[in-house]
Amino acid sequence: MLNKKRPGFTLIEIIPALLILAVASTVIIFLSLQVTSLVNSTKLKNEKVALAQQMLEQVRGYYQANGYAGLFDKANTSGQCYFYSETSKQLDWGSPTASCDPTGLPYARVKLILVGSQVRVEAAAKWSWKGASQIVTDQTSFYNY
Image 1 (cartoon, one colour):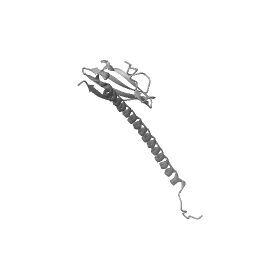
Image 2: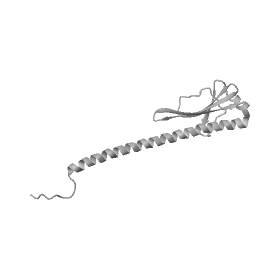
Image 3: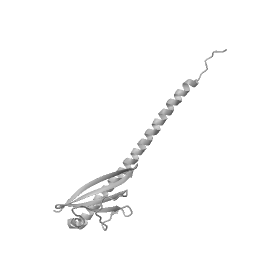
Image 4: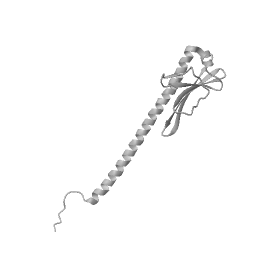
């Protein structure tokens, strides 16, 4: 019998190497999926923050066009809500509602609250992500000078 060593790898060497490669590949794929999910979640949250800020700017524009009295007329002490229309990309000033938190998701709204001589404006955007309800809010106040 010849006892020559041949170049190459034995089966005992290849199986552990393939096992290590499989585990490493699985970890890399799992981490890639997690990063992708985090990026998508952050992107959606940033869009909703921008929407809340946009709604505050629309209220500011309404205030500049109609003055404090116009904004004052749109608010009350318990809070008056105006919802954002996805089709017109504007707040629906013609349809106020006292119900500020509807059961359906998603929604975006502003709430105008009279607090003394100021109108406090709260903007909120709510959506669902992976079965959990998410919300971002922003607020500002307008004063009667």
